[in-house]
Image (spheres, rainbow, N blue to C red):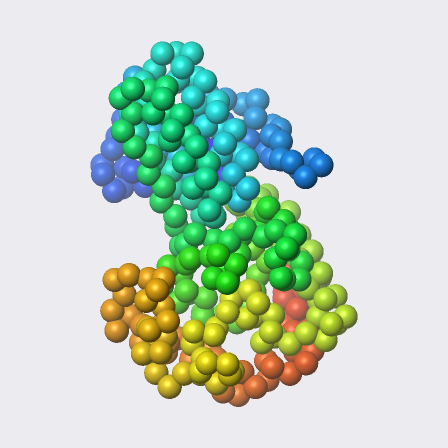
Amino acid sequence: MYIIYSGGGLNFEVRNALQKAFGYKWHSSSYITSQRFEENGEFSISDDSYRKFQIPDDPTIYSADIVASGASLDNSLHYLDNYLTRKKINLKNFFFVTIGGIKAEEVLEKWDKIFKQNHPEYERTILIYLEGRFALGSKNSPLNNVLPNTDLLKSYKLGSLISPEYEFSQFEKMIIPIEGCVIYDGGKKSFEPVKHIIDILEFWEKQEKSAVDQNLSLWNEYNARFPLDMYLMSGTTKPADSFLSLKKRKEEYWRGVNDHEYKQLFDKFRWLWSDSRISRAGEAGSLISTCQKKISYLKSLLEAI
C-alpha cells in the first residue's frame, strides 16, 4: 500500500485516515509538488521538481487532491506511470479522494485505460468525491465574478451534484452558498492563510462592485449560485407547503434519503429562509450590504495579523 500526495493533497491527511479507519501502520508516503498556470488558454505545470518516490511492487495506491481543471492530477499520474514503468513495478489499484468536479473523472478514466494497458495485473480505479461533484466555472457561467477553470460551484443547474449532508450545511449561514468557490485555493487555505483571506476579500470586493453597478438583490445572487427552486412552489418565491415537494424533485438526484432526512433538510431551509427574510432579500440592491459586511469582517482579520 502506498500514498501519494501532491501539494493540495496534504489537506486530506490520507495517511492518518487510513490508520484510524483500518489500523494500517506500515503504509508509506510519496510526494510530488505541482502548480498549474494558464497561458494562452491552456494549462501547464510548474513547480513540480520536488518528487520523493519509492514504491514496492503490486501496490494499491491512495491519493487525494482538490481537482478543478484536472491539469495537476493529470501531470502527477503521468509522472507516476513513467516511474512505475521505469522501475518495472506493476500497479494493482488506484484510489483517489477529491473535493472537485467532473474533470477528476475525465482524467481518471483516461489513466484507468493506460494503467490497464501498462500493468497487466491492474484491477481498478476508485474515485471518491467528498461533499459532492461540483461544477467547474467557465467563461460562459451565468454568474458575476467567476474564475474560469478554477472555481468549484454548487449550482445543480450548472452540473453540480452535492450530497444531502452538504446541502444541509449550506443553510447554517446565509453567506455560505454565495461564496465564490467551494474551497478557493486549498493550498493557500492550509499553508498561506493570509493569502487565502486576501483571495476571498478580492472576490467580495468584486461582488460589491457588481452589486452596486447592477443594483443586485441578495435573492437573485443566492439563487444563481445555489438555486432554491426545489424548495419553492413552482414559479414563485413562496416556500412549498411541506418536504414532500422537495422529496419528489430531489429523488431524481439522490438515492437512499428517507422522509425524516428530507424533513430535516426542508426544516433547515425554512429556519434560514423565513417569509420575511425572503421578502427582504428580494429587494433591489440588498446584496450590497451583505458584501459590505463580509468585506468588513475580512479586513478585520487582516488588521489583526
